[in-house]
Length: 227
Image 1: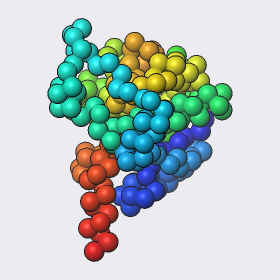
Image 2: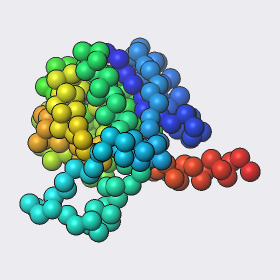
Image 3: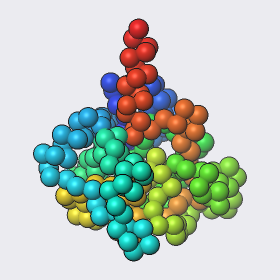
Image 4: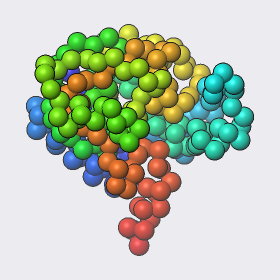
């Protein structure tokens, strides 16, 4: 199964973490390809050109106001870039007509992928471990035979690492053909069935809080390093 690592080649920190992740995955015998992500500034232009708008966000059945959406950061340039990066790989999955694993670059690897059968989307890395403590034992001390466990939370625990099948990728493409959401909110139970691998492979780095959504912070870091 092919692995794709989303990174931003213009950001040194992203290149560094992506290269480390690539080496780790290749050390486990995985086929890996670095995939150029979409920067926030470019994402704004793409969304405007494609007429993409924020998917109607609701909370407890009530649509959020513009102020609430802004507070949550759902419309930030980096969020748009992150979503479009994942959307592009959903398209790649459909094009290849085979399951793939999608990674964001800032992952600490623990183990190799253990092949199992799953339905739509299989979580293989935890993006927000502090929000999903019940799954941490799968990362630290998995037991028994590897299996796909039903994940009942509304959306992904961050989308830093997941396997996806072509039919599931097509569901997401159809759902968000003219809209966007934070990528981990876009992958949710209303669109696809989510399962989590009992041998979770890795966890997102907490130190530095690196993420594709931190485009502006990374740009400042790049400018400082150039002086």
